[in-house]
Amino acid sequence: SQQGEEDPQALSIQEGENATMNCSYKTSINNLQWYRQNSGRGLVHLILIRSNEREKHSGRLRVTLDTSKKSSSLLITASRAADTASYFCATDATLGDSSYKLIFGSGTRLLVRP
Amino acid sequence: DGGITQSPKYLFRKEGQNVTLSCEQNLNHDAMYWYRQDPGQGLRLIYYSQIVNDFQKGDIAEGYSVSREKKESFPLTVTSAQKNPTAFYLCASSFDGQGLYEQYFGPGTRLTVT
Image 1: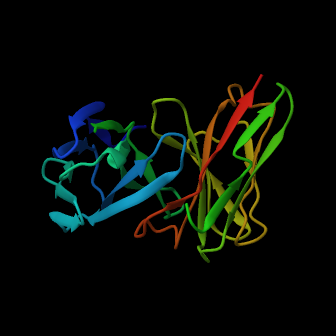
Image 2: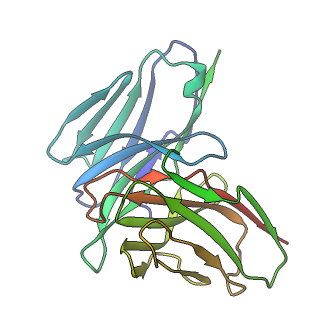
């Protein structure tokens, strides 16, 4: 079942512009993570934000979390052509044996035009 | 991708044959995961292992099998019982299975079954 859903599905911007991607989820979470995937490659972890945090920064990345609205956003400032990739949010869900799994959305495909 | 490797990068098999995908990590992580990704989609969990000699089914385990005889290794066998095995397979690991840490992904294996 899909927990996190990204919006928009695709985004095309000019180099230097900011890119904002949103993620909505359905059930309560302990943390939310954002990952990037270049075409045909594995995922790379970007940021983990815990449920008691509202905002987190890492370089040109800014992530916000609103647990009351069950939503998160990823902002990439001053985008570069190298930021072209798919971006996924992932939320944790408990498994029957008290471990956790990540549930991934279907991603936002970002194209940054030079 | 550093620290977790998958081989081969591309794999071609005839229908009815079993095939084993390799996943190795040198991060000293306890937890390891196998995901399947179909075109334009997010990741779906096949199997996970919280600790050596233990593994559990994920959301789409039918037609797959795994083993975890060593901490570093978590091979996935795609059996002939898997109805639609052509996909991109991603292996990941994390410090533990408690959902508090990010997952590190390998570069993936693209399996094509004809």
